[in-house]
Length: 620
Image 1 (cartoon, rainbow, N blue to C red):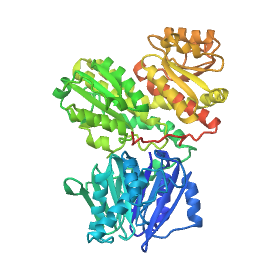
Image 2 (cartoon, rainbow, N blue to C red):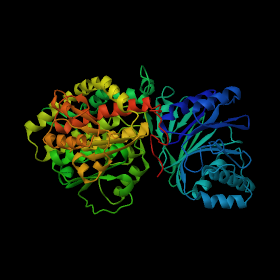
Image 3 (tube, rainbow, N blue to C red):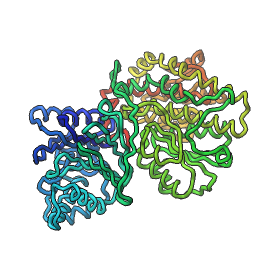
Image 4 (cartoon, rainbow, N blue to C red):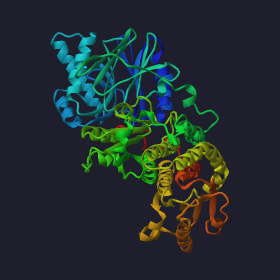
């Protein structure tokens, strides 16, 4: 959600900023812009629409310079217009700013600044911060400060941040302070790339790939000064901070399309490898268990846990539902799945024997982070299942498990879902063996997990059949997705994927709940997608399918290979490999991802950057 890039050093900055903004497009945005400081002049170019349109403006109106900031905006305050695009200038152009987050008291500050004579040219909350910086700079100059002095500029930033309520990731330049970019963070992620006589700034690591191997993740309430001569970080409360430099493990191939037309398709087809990455080094055949070294809890600590709360948003919440079934079946631990956006404001009865797991791809989701912090505040052990190394949730949790799925660029999550389900299976195995699960049962699960990358590769062979089904149904405007037990969350996830990228109304339900209301929606123009692999209640789901057919509703079935009987009832069947019920989400989710992808393409939608959505939701 929104994206920031910045640079100071020896390179020509304009093209570098635009490339960085291109790499941040997956986060979701509606406008883009850059500001460059050169020889005491602040130059701004910005435009509503795609980064490509901004690049076109820069071709006809180029800007020179070696220090600059850029931004892709996802509208929160004010429509997607040129005027509301970032960067924003403060005062008479003495300050330029880009901002991720939400300033909650912007209306009050705006009225105060208007009364002081400041003129606003946008409807954004960000312009308030820009003018407030300019006002504080003027005040400091009256008190004897200098606009070209970094200490004065830092004092101005400090005074401004004290007045802001809400969340922010800021990139700031002062016109009279050359070769300097200042960054500040509170609730919105920022990463600094460390180079030789140059420094980079970004919302996440993707713009830094290929430019540096060393990064510093800013923490909340830290302010950083980037200059060619060095990096300085101060915590607003505790003072100077020694930069903790991390190695950036991403490589350029991770963020390139390769032979694929879209990132979403690339990431769907990466799932055999990402599931293998999730289990690599984590299976112990001798002990018939999994290896969970990052939990930072002893076996004694884990045995005393009598309840688990999984908290997440969106696709990660669906993975958590699968995890609930896994943990209760294998580990026999009562488990609940909470929307993070609700948990952060609730006060459920939780004892010190309740373990909280935050599930997140980005590690920066605002609601999930807030829920985790609230649970930490109350003394609960908090762990994370996360994909992004160095993210805020990964750093603030007491421990956790990385997915190792690599960057996920497509806004609609695919490979992260299957990796999360895989890790939750490993966790259930680990806790199960610690409690009551037999050695043979553990060995059996390990053998089945080792087979999953090949099973997923085989599942992807349904691609042509899914394309055929998509071509048949893409003109329909309402879909129902139905499943039972482990496949109910898969139905929810399939419906979400279709909604996200094709803008078709779709709803997921437990199949048996059809009779309790949703069956009223069934007609010849409402296809029902049944997730119906073999299992203990297979006949009951077939009965639900018959009820749909009796009302002339089109039926698409996701079924196990070799199930010829299902074709008697369903209009179209997409086959997946026959696996154990608890592993069925890993194979059944994939044809639903492909179905959403191809339906969206046939409807002319942008599958990687669907409207109104952001990859990482860093504001409430």
